[in-house]
Amino acid sequence: MPFVTVVGLVAGFLTTVSFLPQVLRTWKSRSTRDISLGTYLIYVSGIVLWLIYGLMLRDIALIGSNAVTLLLAATILGLKLKHG
Image (tube, rainbow, N blue to C red; front, side, top):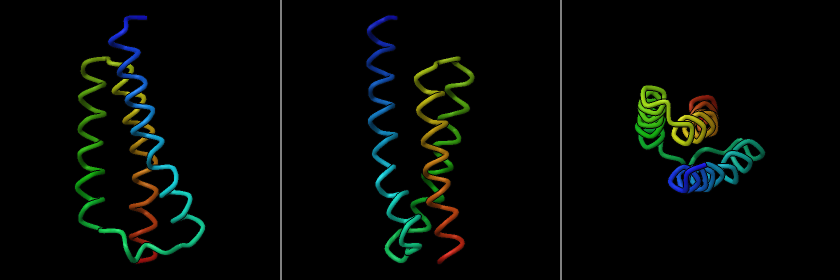
């Protein structure tokens, strides 16, 4: 595996798992009061575009990290929409 791919996979992993503590905390507390709806709407939209870009390039690092990040960020967004 080329070094550049390894760097991309590690970067994607780290930036993706950084959302896990927020998802777990939001899921447990059901409190989204301090989470900005606008920020997450823009962020999730950007992640969708990054995922499309990765698919167009067939770049496994972009596809994998953005697919999982989309799942995590969309979970937070969904909780925000549900719980205000």
